[in-house]
Image (cartoon, rainbow, N blue to C red; front, side):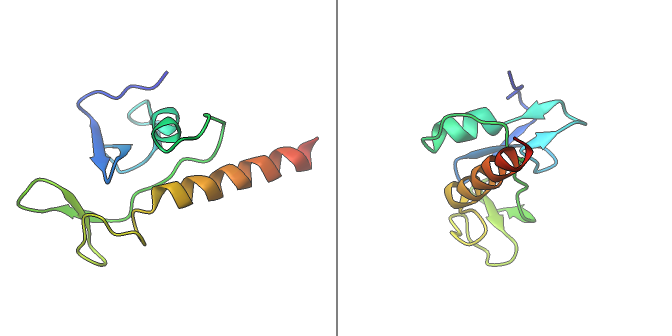
Length: 97
């Protein structure tokens, strides 16, 4: 089970640790299960996502530094990124069987 304590950061509906990692050994944080469930997936063992560099706007929301958007589909397209990570995990599993 993951620790979604005060050290977690929400960026466009996805949870990350304070280091902007979905899985972080330093924080003992793993937000994959929550993020998978939020975006409608059953949890599987996959690589964790990493949020791109961001800044906090005056409303307290994270926005990507590259485009200056809080809802940037390019940088914060988590569902698409999770789908890719899940596909890679499944392919890796097929190769080892």
